[in-house]
Image (cartoon, rainbow, N blue to C red; front, side, top):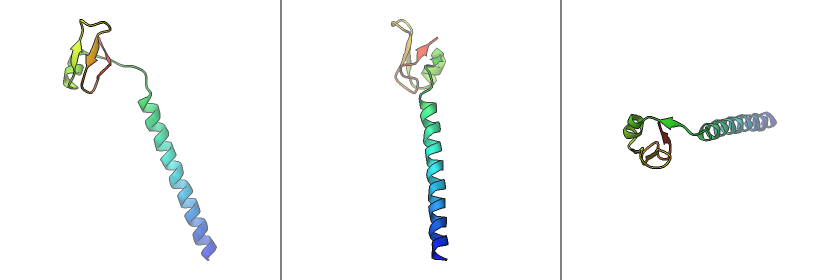
Length: 70
């Protein structure tokens, strides 16, 4: 009886560890997506300032900091 409890605990731990690794992989894949292009209004809504006259036309500050403004 005791062996069954230990075995069940090992299976449950392995299942939870597998779910944790799957979630980490998904978060990493989402964070590594390619560069995005935002509109000047999106840049402003995100708390940034569109630097259209600067080289590269980037959003400075806020949620879209460093993203290209189109």
